[in-house]
Image 1 (cartoon, rainbow, N blue to C red):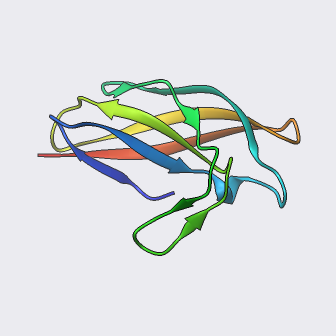
Image 2 (image 1 turned 90 degrees about the vertical axis):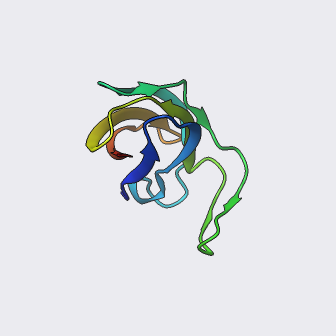
Length: 102
């Protein structure tokens, strides 16, 4: 997964695309947890519509989550760990990096 970036003073919603973790036809059914140490991570929600990004990529419904992320110290890269349950009753654990720019 790509490293996300933000400035320390920013508080914004970030998408975490999990398509690569899913089996064909599998979708995200629930988000069990999304946490980070030293950085503030809000409650995650499942994105329930297709998302069209500026780079031309498209992510299907229920293949990504969105959460507000804030705080952190400039020059630090944090690990955000999440757990989701899929439509196939699989539990997937993933890590995402958030680089806080100075």
